[in-house]
Length: 199
Image (cartoon, rainbow, N blue to C red; front, side, top):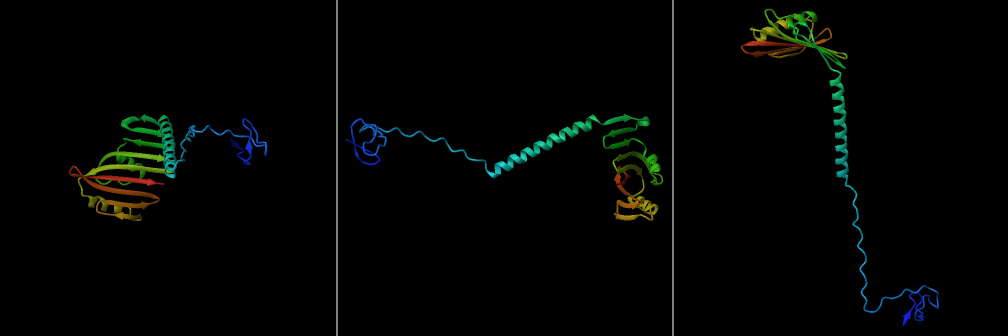
């Protein structure tokens, strides 16, 4: 005997609706029948954690910077022009400025108004101009001591503001130019390196 699941009234055999309340009759499984297990739910997807999101963001930023650096490097390489000048000098032109190397340092020193240490042997020089920056590096050799070299240059710039004066280095500012003079022992001599810059 079957009963309505809604109102509990006795149902006629084979009826599809309850005669009392009109509810649809849901057939009960036969006695002893095994109910099928419900289908398993798909595993719940978890969202990315904060650490994973940060790592992905950092990786993307680094990737973008590498791409920009590569494009910039290709641009600069494509626009660098190297010109061999007379007397072994080289001129390098870039989109940002020029650099010239190979001229003897005594000639460059005279052109820039930098006194040459008496008896010093000229070496190489590099002169560059990049935007508003202008700079030069001059090298000389002498048999005199670093103290003698620095005393000479200190006397040649009496009105300069001296910012550093150490046993092998003198840095001064004269007429808007910063001049750094460094003297190092090299192969039994003193190597004089003069760097002059103006921003």
